[in-house]
Length: 421
Ligand SMILES: Cc1cc2nc3c(=O)[nH]c(=O)nc-3n(C[C@H](O)[C@H](O)[C@H](O)COP(=O)(O)OP(=O)(O)OC[C@H]3O[C@@H](n4cnc5c(N)ncnc54)[C@H](O)[C@@H]3O)c2cc1C
Image (cartoon, rainbow, N blue to C red; front, side, top):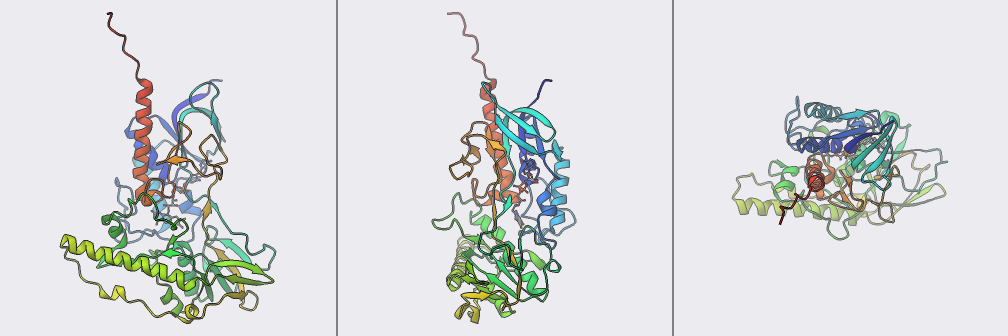
């Protein structure tokens, strides 16, 4: 049986795979996208019920299509986001094969390209784009043993407050997921402890305009690298309930108990680092620095935007910050559930090529890996801050399609016969 050959296969039918398909089609490069489940599956089944996009609809989209049925300044609910990508894939006639898992990719022997083993058979491809997402496997640090009588779930498995047993809850991690889940649980009447690590927290809006715009005009989405020491710093933003600035002191004033980084566990007691005030100060610092840069931009460009002095008011530190809890006996505090909003790891076990460092991380420059013909797309900070987000991945996909196209043109070139001398 001859094996089907295709120039490029794209693994993953989320936003990255769809953006890749658009640019490959524009360059006339034959390709297939394999998605093991449905288009934009993570938005459908791996996120909580009330999730809305963190950026407004005018911003969190591809350049080629607006959201329908949503005000551009509103935040699209997750189902609308999934629908958006499904519609987009239709619009560009993306050759997506859903329900097909790529099980193994390995180099062909003595020939260029790769052998691609899928759940529905074998193929050969010159190029493989891994578009399987920046957030693949839920990561839960091994701190609290599994055999306690406490529900422990990752944010990827959290759906709504009704899923948790009666009692208090500890949410570990105060990036955008953790803080939104903690707030939802508190508003549902639960006693909530929120473990807050190092973070940045931009204002939702300043001088009347959303922070996504400010990050754009200030060139921050285009930043190529994180500042030194910022590798583990998360960003806390929320589009929930029409969008609002994440304000930890305000949450504390409403009854949430903030604690520092979750460090260890022994004999039914969980221990927190004494870094809460420091972490809040870091968040405040990033917040105020952005206001300063925005003001400088307004002055430099003579923009007519209303002043916003209230944005600079920082609430006084609540008691949980001035007298931080360093340890919590879970039974005594009535904690019956822990939600770990502690991020994700990646899984490239199917990709058997020389494109990883000794810790299994993709070895690449702007998505072009160290294995010729293998590309990554959608990684956090792949080429810039915006890379893992909806609007950023589209631009990175263009870059990779250009690269594949250029390489194809080299291969197509044949030395013209030299004129007889
Ligand atoms: C809670 C949360 C909220 C977010 N909110 C926003 C937001 O508001 N705005 C924004 O811009 N970004 C947001 N992001 C970031 C980013 O946009 C999403 O993570 C997005 O899902 C990433 O898209 P992707 O295509 O790169 O990866 P994914 O959506 O993860 O898609 C990868 C696809 O690959 C498939 N797959 C994996 N392995 C295989 C295989 N071996 N064979 C075949 N298929 C495979 C999976 O089924 C999946 O559908 C959010 C992320 C999270 C976690």
